Image 1 (cartoon, rainbow, N blue to C red):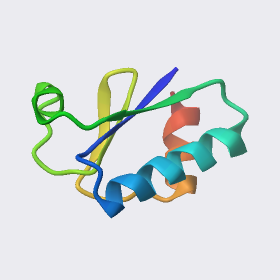
Image 2: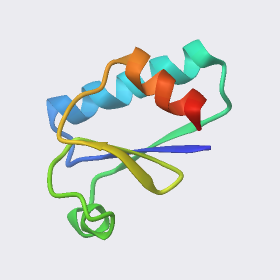
Image 3: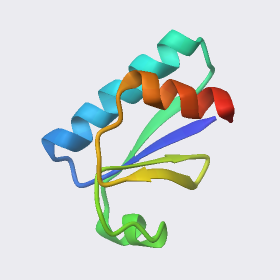
Image 4: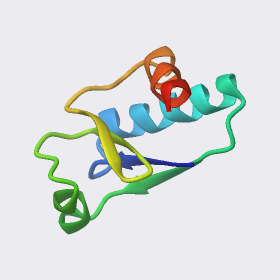
Length: 78
């Protein structure tokens, strides 16, 4: 599973990445966190507000920092 963090490296983007890793660790899921920081790549997702979270290329959240618990719920719903 690939968990993508879409954002240009702002503090909120970094926090979302940390929360995503915490959720992966808590859930015991085999997943990789990938940061997507190039604006052209972010635009390919159709995201207009960062930070955003995508799972295997599908945007699950945009414009807010999800908690580790919220991310874990998304991962487990799968």
